[in-house]
Amino acid sequence: MCPLQFTGGWALDILTVLPPVLAIIVAMLTRNVYAALGLALLASETLIAHFNPGMGALGAIDRGVGVFDSTGNTRVLLFCLLIGALIAWMRDSGGVEALVSSLMKRGLVSTPRRAALAPALAGTAIFVETNVSLLSSGVLGQRLFDAHGLSRERLAYIIDSTSAPISALILLNGWGAYALGLVEPYGFESPIGVVAGTIPWNFYALITLAGVYFTVFSGRVFGPMKTAGLNRDVLVEDEEPVAPTRAIYMWLPLLVMIGGALGFMAWTGGGNILAGNGSQSILWAICLAMLVAALLLISGKAFPKGGLQERGFAGISEMVPVVAILFLSIALGDSLRVLGTGAFLSSVAAQFVSPIVIPAVLFVVAGVTAFMTGTSWGTYGIMIPIAMPLALALGIPPSLVLAAVLGGGVFGDHCSPISDTTIIASLAAGCDHIDHVRTQMPYALVGGGIAVVMYLVAGLVVSL
Image (cartoon, helix red, strand yellow):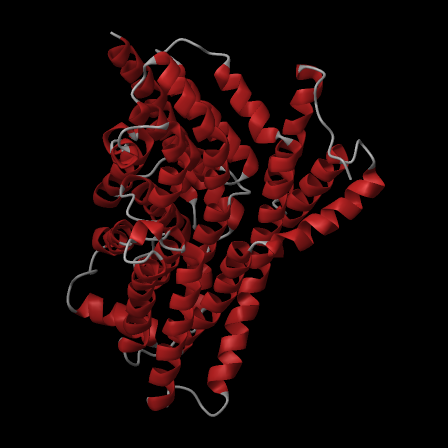
């Protein structure tokens, strides 16, 4: 089937934006992310099939099957299922309660401020892979936040607003390798220097991290976050807590997962962590962590006979709805790339030729593209090949425009209800996905607005 080529000007080109707009509107109005993503996928494939809804429906099915053509996609989906088993083992064995009790007895998380600081520090320290960061800090934070009456939505904001921003700043991870691969073809004397030079220019990431720690230390929130979780207190009281057992049931598997991800990335990269295979490494790491957890739980007789398997499958089943959302998000992102949504949005940025506004425009367009496609990495694949030639042609520091694109992608992800990162953050924090997007968006918009102003100033300064 030949995809539709939009060559009739903006009147037709703008139709490429219709599917993601539809997804966002339906998700916000109905709070049904499955319907939103499914309808958007159908709309995108219908446009690709020359406005034929029947062929569009068949194309949507094939697009879903095509998700598994990518070993990386398959590994991420499998990882998300297996992490459910590991979380269930840590939780139902009493390991989470034991670790939380230990931290509280030592006075390390004895106040709401310290309880909020724990997942923030964990999210900042685990910069090697965003999923590992989100899930590790989220599992740690859930019981801490419940114990101190803090909302799960605030936890989701903290872990979501530390994982991706820190990964986009400390680029000793898959993000850095990906950016380096996109920058290298443009003949810079030091491509690594261009990527490393983005740190001081990545205004959104820096502002977002500062906002997280301000929220943690001040305890102040604004917008919908003020009333988030007010109805959850009753639910928490009704939950029967698991008796604390041994903290090692939680911290050792988590340590193995994090250390394993780092080690496997170095191994798959031939000693260079930047060149490592992220999806392969995290899948191997979760399998290793599950093996360690299983041996611990069996030797400690934490569950009755057959209980380990039963709870493992129960944990996997808890992840199925989230994995379904992630699956639909990946399929939609693939479809939108074929449709040309990102190419259309990025072409808008190319029409602005003034060096002063280029960084700010690239940040905004990258943000809009990530918001509508639900993927920051997909946005980078579209925007960096546009940003680098613009930098060379107009004499703008390449690190500045690269930072604008990197930050814009994270900004769009933080606002998008169809982003895989926000989905996993909601999962890790144990809160409703749409509630997380709704409460985090004001923070992202404030940070994005400040970043736009700073990029305008930066564009003016480098143009003098």
